[in-house]
Length: 315
Ligand SMILES: [Zn+2]
Image 1 (cartoon, rainbow, N blue to C red):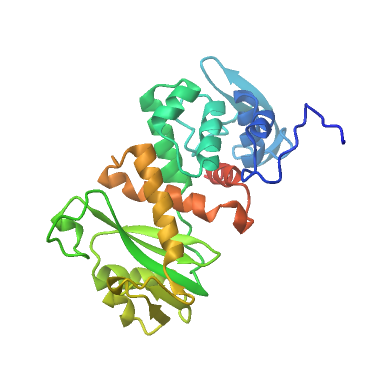
Image 2: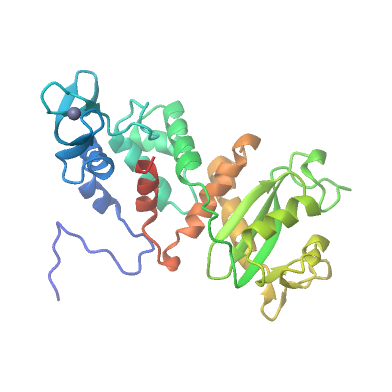
């Protein structure tokens, strides 16, 4: 049997996770290391030289610890002394919370597929609930947004779902949110690919059609349920299943991929947030689940923590 090195545990290949907690802790052991990484990433690849905006040329910089404030780096040119704060313009800039805790919060959010509550973060890292909530909120809204540069293509499923209050008796199936507490989310997913999901005010043609046209490449196959609006887009090779007649699958035609996404999202929201998602925050929660879906292992992209990190420092 091959010997194992207990100091470098090997990851099980069956594991869905990419960066393990042990790997994370080894790479980011403390606040100073996190700050140094950001300094190098944003300003100084070798850790010493950086462009000084005051001198107008590259200079040698030295750490400049300030009492009660975060370390800056300072230009060593005679008579200059310009300071660079590595966190300027990032979500960490105005926070007094340790960068190590911020990074841990990003790690946890990146590696938990069905989400984690601020309450749980509060317990795990020992910050107050308000701080934990604010960290989550910033990570979610600033780092987990959907990138909509490339339209979906190939075989794409589109569907809408309701979040929040249950449909009341007598309420039209596709009624807008004006009638109740329900919110509508429109989703489109490329089979074996990414999802796009967005909160829409109503489920009328004017709400759905432009968003589908924006997010799905013309010429794609579009599979939906029987909602009439989907039949009004000649840009696509459209086919639909008639849920009203209990038809859910007809050969390749079905909407089970997007329904699978809805079920992860709703299960997560019910479990983590107990369904208590404020209206104004709903899109950011939808974004969080889309982020997990779009950075799942099967797609072969970079580790989701590294994606969050890259977005955090590109500010
Ligand atoms: Zn200078």
